[in-house]
Length: 219
Image (cartoon, rainbow, N blue to C red; front, top):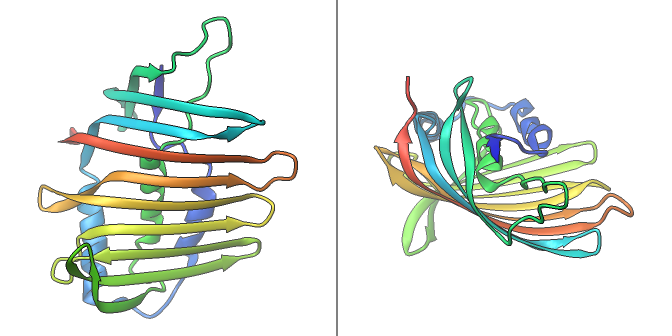
């Protein structure tokens, strides 16, 4: 089984952040944009997705390990190397849920020089002091927020929290942790809570995606 990253239904929701405009950002925000751009050269060779939730009134539990197996128009392709519990061969193959890495990649739409962000310095998190950037966006039924803790000297991301709420559509809470890699930082763990709000289509999912063994994207 192969899958193409990214493949997230929240793409449209997150891309709405890109339409926010404001005064030119400060130099630290520009550094953060540069860090996020630099991180795009790194690709995880291995991912593990753990899914726990309820869909169509049935419990859903999955653990899926995937490995980088190739490229499709410069996009990484992953092959599932382990899945628990195994799919029933007598039934149609279940679709692999959108993983945290996909959603994390979509959030790069928010990193624009003219994005309307507010800055708070001297914020303590995990025993260290960071600068916190925050963003809010409302567009019709969609409300979206972002909190991003970055290194106050380099702008390198440490943690990001996103909340997306669409009336009668979905509610998504996503927390992403970053790890230093090659002078920048990469999203190594993403935890998501997803609730489908479409009437009579209710579903709740908890997903944790971990990424490891990063390599430089081939030129």
